[in-house]
Amino acid sequence: MNDHPADAPPGCPAHGGSDTTVPPAPELFTWEFATDPYPAYAWLRTHSPVHRTTLPSGVEAWLVTRYADARQALADARLSKNPAHHAGSAQAKGKTGIPGERKAELMTHLLNIDPPDHTRLRRLVSKAFTPRRVAAFAPRVQELTDRLIDGFAAKGEADLIHEFAFPLPIYAICDLLGVPPEDQDDFRDWAGMMIRHGGGPRGGVARSVKKMRNYLLELIHRKREDPGDDLISGLIRASDHGEHLTENEAAAMAFILLFAGFETTVNLIGNGVHTLLGHPEQRARLQRSLAAGETELLATGIEELLRYDGPVELATWRYATEALTIGGQRVAEGDPVLVVLAAADRDPARFEGPDTLDLARRDNPHLGYGHGIHYCLGAPLARLEGQTALATLLKRLPDLRLAGESADLRWRGGLIMRGLRTLPVEFSPEAGTGGR
Image 1 (cartoon, rainbow, N blue to C red):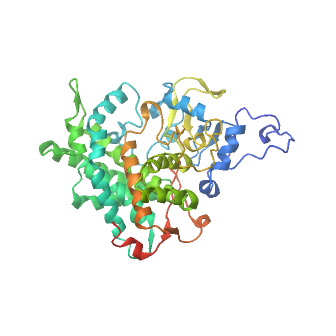
Image 2 (tube, one colour):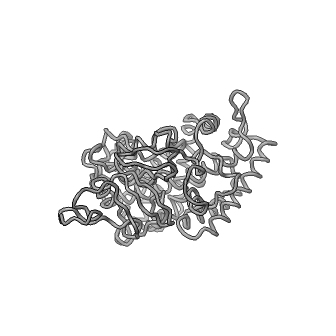
């Protein structure tokens, strides 16, 4: 990968210096990097904190890796979410954003618009996606969690991604959106195509996105005639001072809530279980806490798992609307900027012992769900699902263990998300039967 360290110090390989105390610049976006990107991010924070690189797609962009710079960039109004501000070619612009979302029906969503449209749409959507609705949904999340574990508890083995972490948020968000049960397996298939191939060939992804888009438009039309107590009906009813969501805006909002809402939770559960299995003392501490009926460590633990190896590696695309400076580095108008949440959340300038997992960590303002006006709207639901999933797994399958070696696991390709392809586990079958 052709990288260009920004403001590299003397002795850095970019200057051709002879100081051998500075390690060579890491190679980014390889399979080895995907397995463990954190050493490379540590190098970038130290030697090239705002780093210009060529992405696997061929697009050049800036990577922001320090915590303070990341918070600044995430809240900087001069960094637009609108791809129209990208100074690159039409071909380059087509390689940003969500695969398959080129149609206008899906472009007007919270991830790629700015104020005042963003303010209006977020306000309208928030009316239908309230914390009270999420809290009321807790029993359903528990029901789905137990039902999925029931499906493999007697086997003594499972792929926790395919059999648990993936279907749980799909069925949950489908229930919230108001997708009828008989149609939810179609959503699972479409979402599966996107999550498996999001970083690869886009033909199948685009077809799945098209099917999902057409279905959502049809479902919105049906719910206009026969609304219910669900999120899509709420989007249709949402209004503020005479402003209403158009049908295309409602479809785009439903799509992005599904797309962003399920994959982050898949990765939160998968990465979280993987991390706990690799830290047996922390896992045992959490299990003792749960056995005692305590929930405080579970709450802080989810936040620590989000910080330590979170589901979103890079924040979604931003584009400089004017020349600006980030971390001492000049960024030209029209340049794409990617904030590396995974690097910022391991910054020793902000977190004590950043490479140490501490489920009881208190001072933990991680950026796992972003910062500023684009902070993840679905974060409360993801936290609910993550806490429910991990607590139930650890209580029902107390001797859960990795089947095979951690080094043999493969991480999905792609730029924004960080998640495992599979997570094979073993456990005592008896521990998963009648355990509720």
